[in-house]
Amino acid sequence: MAPATPAADDSHQQLLDSLDLIPVPKPFRNPNWNPPVRRNKNVKQIVADASRKEASVMATQNNSGVSTPQPGAGGGPDNVSVARATQNLSGLAVSDGPVATYTNIESAPSLHPASQKRYCDLTGLLAPYTDPKTRLRYHNKEIFGVVRTLGQGAAEQYLEARGAHVVLK
Image (cartoon, rainbow, N blue to C red; front, side, top):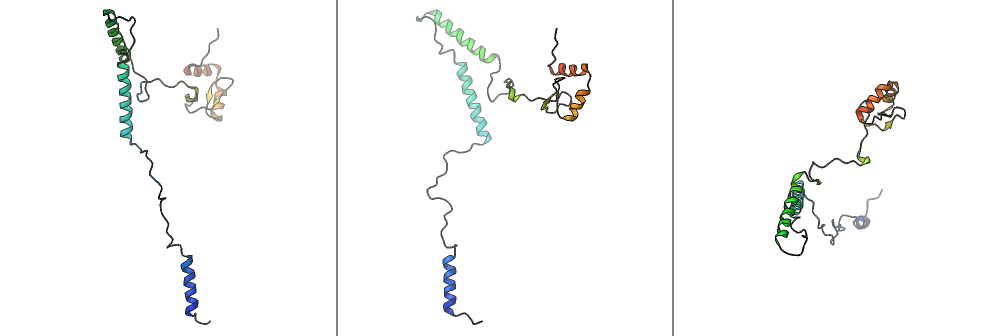
């Protein structure tokens, strides 16, 4: 094998230089890109905003009697006493019981059927099945075997504990 001539070596180097990707400019970001205007809030900011919003709703409810239109067009003493009574009643209505909002826990639980989970009458586990004969809910086929071996009185007692016992007269 003959040694490489300098001309052949130069052409090889030129080919490598033309195929090399390192000197090609690769911008990391689009020069027209701008960051979004919206920023994320931390938990402290979210809680502060929610409490501020709830406080403004409570202030609106407390002052709701002030702007209530009064019966009668005159400005006599009758209208003044009705305005005071309306303010007092609105204050009593707000302070009498808990106000259901998204941020307090005094609101009632949901009664929507999708939010109601069904639990096994025997084990307390989630129960996707119901026995058509006894109307007891059960978790799996092993519990179903136990449900079918129960006496008539025991099944009724389980239904009564759940509040689904129906007594026909």
